[in-house]
Structures are given as C-alpha cells and as structure tokens.
Length: 343
Ligand code: SAM
Image (cartoon, rainbow, N blue to C red):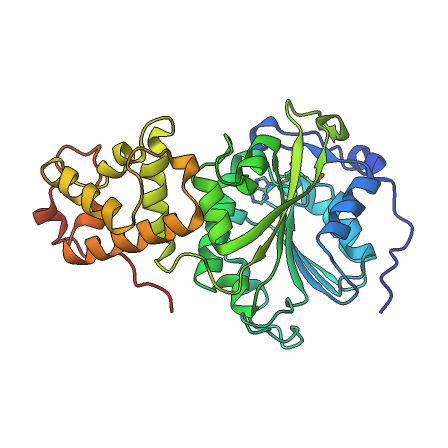
C-alpha cells in the first residue's frame, strides 16, 4: 500500500483556499505545524495498515499525519460543514483510504462505523497483551473533550462501541489542567473524579504537552496529549455508573473529610448509619480526604455502596439535592437498581 500523499497545498494555504476561519463557538484552534501533528500520530503509535477514527479533523493537520503514517483506513467525524470540502480534497488524495462522516461526535456511535466492514482487522481478545491495530485520535474542542472522554470511558468499561474489537487505544488532547487531572496520582492536588474514572479502566499517560502558541488562533491555555490504553481488567468491579456516582459525591467536598461527601449518597434519616457501615466495612479512615483515597479503596467503597443499593431499592437513584426524593417512591422507578455489574 502506498501511504505517501501526493503533493497537497500547505495547511496554511488550505485555510485560505477554503476560507476557513475559527468559529469560537466550536472552540476551534487549529494545529498548523505538521511537526506537531506528526508527533501526535507517532505517540498514538499509528502504524502501517492500522485503522483509525479521528474526531474533529478540522482542516486536516492530524488527518494528514495519520495518512502519512500508513493507516489503511481513516474515518473522520466532523461537525462543521465548512471543513467538508477541504476534507474531501484530502480524501481524494488519500486513494480510497479516507471516509468522511459529517456528524456530531457526541451523538455518533463510533463502533458502528466499522461494523459492516468485511476487511476490518481481526478483533483482539481483551485479555491478550497485544492491542488491536486500531486507534481513536482527536484534537478535540475543549467544550466537548470532557463529555466525550466520559462517553468513551463508559463504552470501554462495557467493552462496547469500538472497544468490542479489543483494547483500542485512545489518544486525545485536553486543556493542560484537564490532562493533569486525568493522569493525577493519589494525594496530588489535581486528583478528582475524572482521575478515578480514567484510571480504573485505562492507564492514561500524558505523552507530551503543546504550547498554546502552536495553535491558530492561540487558546488561553496550553494543551496536554493523553494516550489511554484500556486495562485488561478494570480495577473496580461495579458498573461505571455506580463508581461515577460514588466519586461525584466523594469529590464534592474535596477539602472536607471523606465521610461528609459519602453521607450525601443517602437520605438524611439513614446517612449516619449507612456512611458509617460503608467506611467500617472498607476500613477507610472517615477523616481522610478524597484525594488521599487509593484505587483499591475506591474499589472497596464502590462495591460496598453497590451492595447497599441492592439491599435498599431506590438508593442508587437518590439525589440529595432533590427535596422530594425518598426511597419508597424511588424504588418504584423502572431502573431503580444500579445497572448490572459487567462480568
Ligand atoms: N483537528 C484539527 C486540528 O488539530 O487542527 C482541528 C481542531 S479544532 C480544536 C476542533 C475540531 O473539532 C473542529 O474542526 C470542529 O469543527 C470539530 N468539532 C467541534 N465539535 C464537534 C463535534 N461535536 N463533533 C465533531 N467535530 C466537532
């Protein structure tokens, strides 16, 4: 297969040719330096004949780098119609390797893109130490980076979407602060809910940083490129949703004792007893703070809370900010129990 692209106008000329100007509303900050876009493809470990999905290709800087790296199939998901003509220009140069999906990535099930493809590389078992020759890559708008990573982490935890094909690695850009939070170790100030959600199901690594000055127009912040490799076995056995709810409440009071956040999982009449039971069962010091809890403690707390939810129907749906919530009525809701624990 020939991975070389025929001569194309430089990225900067592309912007002028197709009259592309960054739309603030979609947080568009383009990467014009091919050295950086090639570095992203290199750190994503795209090899000859790999299959790739790119989210938010824009004028196509990373797209070109992925094609140059030899991907034999590249599907791009782009919401903004102004980018479709320049992307079509690239697709024509890419010799049937590139496919454009003019869609909102937040509403796209990227796993469906390759479903009917008979030439798709073979899936690799989740327990295999090798990764499938597939990748998801994107320099995302900051406003969709967080909801999208949560969507993808959830899909990974259920081994669905593109993760039905195995431990497909994901390489995405984030505002530096968010990238640090995703990779934050225990007891670090940046440790937060997203650190736990990312780290229990993947091993995230910030592979390099990009100065804001490398983008056009320049954003206010620097950017971190994070590569997520799904773990063979998640570090927590409960469903994604149960862990997410626990983490949300525990990190709600970051500076306070962990007990305070935990109590918000329960209606006031049972909060002392239930929080105490959970902490004792998990041998967690009630006066520690959320950032000092390790992954094993989160696993114990989530499993203990899951067990309490099974014992007290309706508890999982309880929201302490809703004054009308009570377990009796919540237990009658259709999905009153937490979703099943994945096997
Ligand atoms: N990847 C290009 C680069 O590195 O130069 C463009 C990056 S720009 C930060 C983000 C891109 O994502 C834009 O092309 C924008 O139109 C696109 N985008 C924004 N929201 C999107 C969404 N919900 N779904 C798909 N693409 C989106």
